[in-house]
Length: 128
Ligand SMILES: [Zn+2]
Ligand SMILES: [Zn+2]
Image 1 (spheres, rainbow, N blue to C red):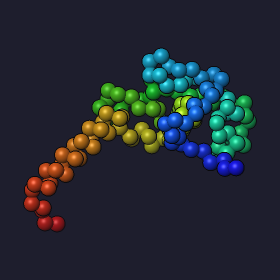
Image 2: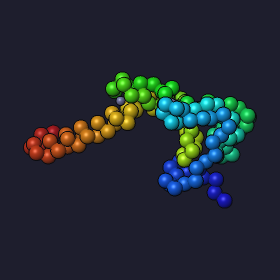
Image 3: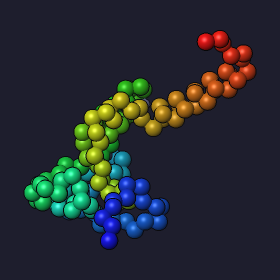
Image 4: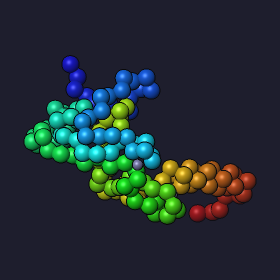
C-alpha cells in the first residue's frame, strides 16, 4: 500500500471529510478554524508525524492573507500559514509565498509577457 499523498487530486476525487474545528468562511468559501494534527489526511506520513497528535493546528482562509505586493488590492495566502480544502487536503504556505503575486497579477503579467514576445517577433533582434 502506498502512503503517497497526492497534492493535486483529480476533479472527481472523493472529497475528504472536514476535520473537526474547521468551517467554511462565508466570505471566501475557504476553510478556516483550528483542527488537531491527527486529523490531517496524511498525518502518518506528514512532517508532523512525530508531534503530539492533539496539537492544535490553525488553518486560515485567504481573508487572513496579506495584500498582494504588486497590486496592493487582492489578497494572497498569508506566508507561514496553513490552509485546508476538501480536495487537496492540508497545505502549508512557506515564507517565500509572500513574493508571489495574486492570481490577477499573475494573469496580467503572463499577458504582458505574451505581448512582449509578439512585439519582439516583429522587430529585428538586437545584437548582443
Ligand atoms: Zn475567508
Ligand atoms: Zn495582485
